[in-house]
Length: 314
Image (cartoon, rainbow, N blue to C red):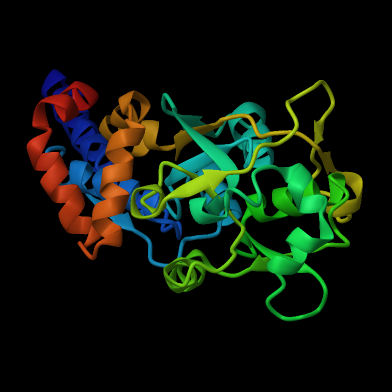
């Protein structure tokens, strides 16, 4: 082959690699507002200043399916927008630490606690108070003898965590979880707080609900060695797990398929460098909760923060 043919072949190969390196990025469609906000910000960065392609895959909301897609590296799922740890420990163990097919960015911190409206804080302020049958009776809406608490949506790992906690604290005879989607719970919460009725529920930071309402967290037993032993992957997860202390602050990541390092290396590099501020996320969530479209919130923020975003891209 002549030198010119070698040059031409190399050019064609480089061209093919360039096309491959701009493959569309598939972003998860997780259900909570923080994850939605992050997903739209990532899409706005990739399709805007990065001049590439990204899609929030409608209905891609099951974290396990997102993780499996990232592991396959086939473009079915490339980005897990809001990976809460240790809630998603099995995903971390299998794909980040084990197969090493999933990478993560530098995380931000969050909290996970049980709350009551502050107008109830004089009656209930700790998990010890939950052991009082008179307190539990205040939260019994259906008259079956057990108080109700919102533990999260049925498919959330955190929902299982709270059920394990209530069992471990010896509260299962007095309390039962309500497992409904976040949107359903928030719609009910507005009316409950307006009427100043009792309500006990799980929530986390950052989230808009803390800006909307005056809430008080319940204190728990301090952490000690062995106080948390959770086996969510076991068939008998509730019976085989214990959790009788306060949560660690959550460590929250953007996770992405390492296959992007070949399929869209510029995006993979950006995702490895992005660093989110909880206060900024809280503001995104608040804007969305007040009716702004997530895409509009994201595009405006990207436009106003070009210098910061440039440090993630370059």
